[in-house]
Length: 160
Image: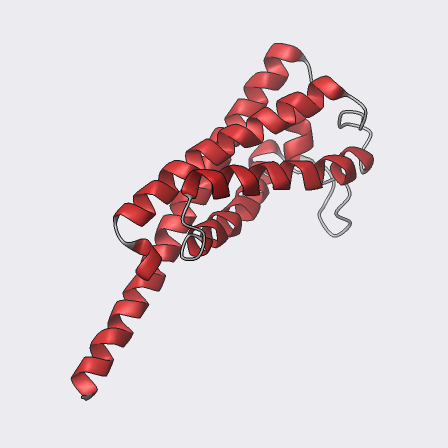
């Protein structure tokens, strides 16, 4: 009896480790794709969506003038737990594409107004072009995240 219980516990532990490992990978890769897409869009269109993505001027305890690499790392620190939560939610929501696009578009919509209001360096809240690129970038983030979700479900991750 003890051996069987230990085996189940070991499987659960392995499932959690896999969830965290794949979630971290998904967060870093999806977040990096989003960051590079926003940087490219900003360079091509002049719309300050990359500045918006990385801007942390409003966080009082963070020193002024952080370099781009540190701001990007903070962006990834936000992306990683979102990806882990996404993979965990696939155990109850069986559609990785719908869930990833829903989560990423919800994140984009919920952050647009507050982030545009917190700094003079970011696009204006009424800048519909910037909003379009913000949504498209997050749509891309969701597409990359969905690939991880499909992989997670195919390997049986919803049971882990």
